[in-house]
Image (cartoon, rainbow, N blue to C red; front, side):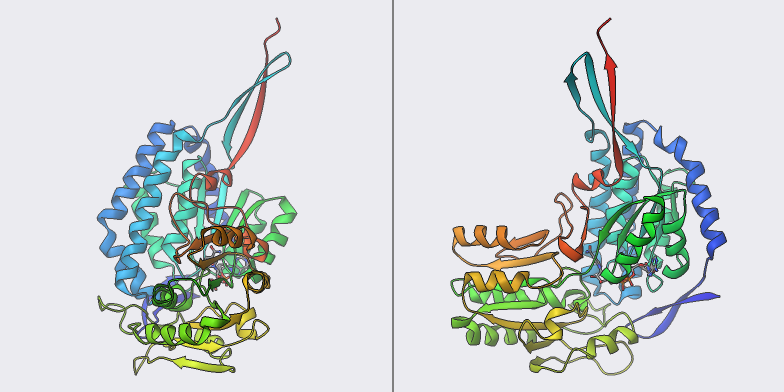
Length: 450
Ligand code: NAD
């Protein structure tokens, strides 16, 4: 059986790949296992040099990687370039982190205890289709920095950039078997990685539904897991905010990547007295989102990833549609930017749509805003727009989410921890925090009393 990879903007096939089965997965895990003893003993400075070389190669091949990602995911080329830039920075960061993630010496009775950060072994990395290379790098970077070997399983729909990354890792001089990329089905390759006794950890990003299966499957071998799952984040706009700025930014916080973003601020909560004014500004800003050919430099939003995704997104449009944008004619899995006036009880406000659909919801006061923002099983991200410094701190502390921004809508930075509360998962990626998820702490006691 082969896997046909399609360009979602044209619906044309762009690659045909072999589909590995359980046996091939076992063979790749065996290769990663064999490579582990030598890789873990590479001197930290040498491991850092190799990661640095990989970062540089990603930079040198930036345009090529951005074009692969744009064609395979339907991402606007300008956004894809930014994502690849981040991938290079992620490898630069973890190159620098290799020799800064160290242990402690702890004075204890009768001697001294020292802690060491040991690698886990072979780690299985399972990633989704929305930010294929970016999310892969968030896992591969810290995993390699800690001395693990990796088996990376990209999503069935978007394997191409990960395959190229595997080639660049070899070109950088990272030894054979350390970075293994195995595209294939989640139900075959993914499942086998989860149950495989020689895989020490699963770093998973994807839906909450599959995350549950990962967690359940990992229990059999007490595998470590990091779960980065879905979201239904709130963009909370108070009446005292700079409404023009908040409204100009809001469309990009939910329609970026055609809404296929775990951090999408897909619930826009607006304080009642400014609701009508804000909705007007929001509609005007949404009208300005440039939807079209992803290879066009000016395009801001491309198509959805697949026909199936388009059907799913369409199923949420049954409420009061305040605004519906335009899409190109012809082939491609297009869906227009859509604003729906909703209550937090509506399905469009409760479930992760994963498409360019935002629910606009009024709230009465600060307590009501916090209540609505938290009235969701998810807890990944969100924004707070206000000019009141004490209020933004109060609200930021009260919202149950892992990554918040104030008077801005960004969630992801190389240096800062990223991850969710509640059913958005657990464990943190990026920054120095990610290294904790790819190492074990070992305590060694040395007796000093004669
Ligand atoms: P998905 O859960 O369907 O698939 C994710 C990955 O898991 C894919 O590689 C898939 O092949 C694999 N998989 C599927 N079934 C499996 C199984 N039974 N065993 C093992 N692996 C399996 O998610 P998706 O549709 O690719 O991505 C969209 C989802 O990802 C959304 O819910 C989104 O919110 C989430 N996401 C979360 C983050 C985050 O950091 N929190 C980031 C991006 C995307």
